[in-house]
Image (cartoon, rainbow, N blue to C red):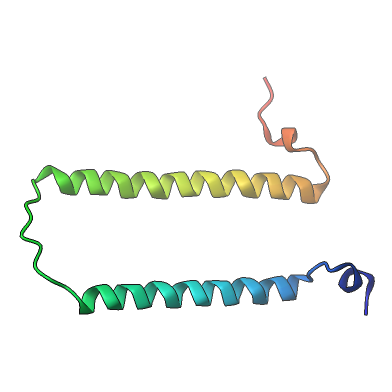
Length: 94
C-alpha cells in the first residue's frame, strides 16, 4: 500500500472510475424519468404564444454560454494550481 492510499487520497484511476459510475448512474436516472414522463403523457390543453419559442431558445443559449464560461474559468484555475502559480496569474495585466 502506498502512502497516498494510506492517506485516503484517490488515484486518478480510482477517481476516473468513480466519475464514470456517477455519470452512468445520473444518465440512467434521467432516462428513467424521461421514460416515465413519456409513458404518462396527457393532453395539456394549453396555449403557447409565438414568442415562447424565442424565450426558450434564449434561455438554452444563455445556459450553454454560462456553462462554457464557468468551465473555462474553473479549468484555468485548476491548471494554474497544477503549474504551481497562484490563481491571480491567469488575470490579464494592465
